[in-house]
Image (cartoon, rainbow, N blue to C red):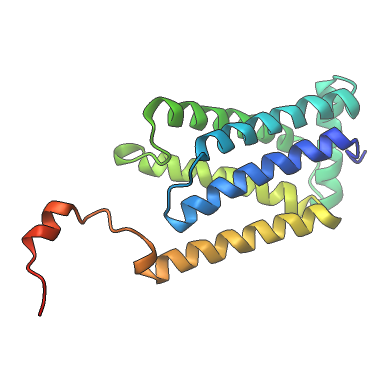
Length: 183
């Protein structure tokens, strides 16, 4: 049962766009003005997508949603599993936890001992967005997903191969003052 109701489609496009915009800024190694607001708006659009899908496609039934997810997975992969629905729930939960953490700490990216769990979380979010927009999608949604991941890949690659584009966090003003200018 394809989810063609306009609110289902528009809300997921907004969610993916919000995710992609913030990830683009992070891949470039730059702070994006208003990024937290975009992040929260993307999560909210995802929630609207889930609610509208349940209202228009699944008759407010988890069982129907699970069966439909299992059918889509079987049709594409040959595995009869509805785990994708549970992964979507986890996706929404992880996204909101990250938004709350970001709002509470004021830091877009976790550091210290939370660095690797934070990166793992974002890899999971990227995996889910890729599957939802490229693997399980078709038409314009697939093109949209491919474009987002191409732009993210280019931004990430450029930030790592052009050090002048990424501020060096190990340099401080004090260190700069200690190093005499070269003549």
